[in-house]
Image (tube, rainbow, N blue to C red; front, top):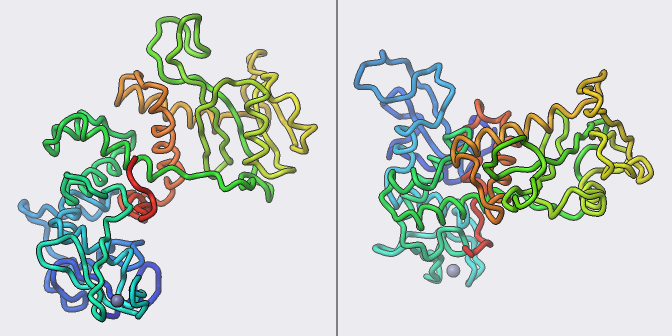
Length: 363
Ligand SMILES: [Zn+2]
C-alpha cells in the first residue's frame, strides 16, 4: 500500500493500517497508521464525534498523545509488535539476505519468522535486538517500553513486576535492556558546542542516602557516585559516571566531546583550571563567593539537569542507586532530556521504539 505520511511528507511504501482499515476510508473518527520509517504513529482526524463517557480515546487537549488505549490499538497483540519489527528491519522491497532480490517477507504461521517471497529464506525480526531469545512475550516488552516512555521520571522495576506479572529479576532485566538502547555513544570527535552554542560543565555526586550535607562523599561513603555532565544551553546533555572529579579525569572528557573555541561555563573547581589553555573560552562562576549568576555566566542549566536526575531517582528509587546501574539511569534521563522538545509533537514512545536496533544482543 502506498501512502503519504502527513508528518514526514514522504511517500511510504507499505504503510500499515493498524485497525485493519484503510486510512482514507476509515469509518471511525480517528484513523491511524504507523509510518513505515518507524518515525511516526499518527492520528488522523477525519471528523468530529461527540465524546461519550464510554469513549476511552484521548481528550483532544491532552498533552499525552500515546495513551494506553492508543497503544493497544496500534499494538493489540504479539503479531502487531512482530510486524512492526518486520517493517523496521525487512520492509517490503528490501533485499533478501540470501537471494539479494528485492522481496516481501511473509509471516510463517506459528513462528516468529518471515520468509522471502522468492527463495523462502527465513528472517527473524527480533534477532539481535534486546528481545532476542526472551521468554517474555514481545507484546509485554512493547508494553514495558510504553510504560517507561510514558513517565517523566522513570519507573521502578518493582512496578513493572506488578504490572505485567513477571519476576522482579525479569522486570529489572527488561528495564535495564530498554535503558541500554537509549545510550548515546560518543563517536570519538567533539560534537558539543561550536557555532556560538555555549556549554556548561559540572560534576556532582549521586546515589547515596546519607545524613548530613549533600555534595561530596564523606569518609566511608563509597556508594555515592561522581557524575560529570556537559550541557549545551538550549541543547543536548551528555552525562557519565567518572572515577573522580579530578582534572586528569575531566579535562580529557571535555576535549573529547566539546568543540574547540566553544565557550565553556564551569564553577571555580581547580579541575577546570586548564580549559583556557586548551583552546576553550572559559568562564567560571565563583560559587564559593555566593555568586551564582553574573550576566550570562552561570551553570544553572547543568545544575537543573542534575536536579532532574536527583529528584527522579529520589522519587523512583528513594535515592538508593548503586554505582553499576548509575550509567544506565543517566542514559535514560539524558535521552528524555535530549528529546524533550519532541514530547508534544511526537510521543516519547516513538522515540524509544526508534532506538530498537538489530545489532545489540542482550548482555
Ligand atoms: Zn530470498
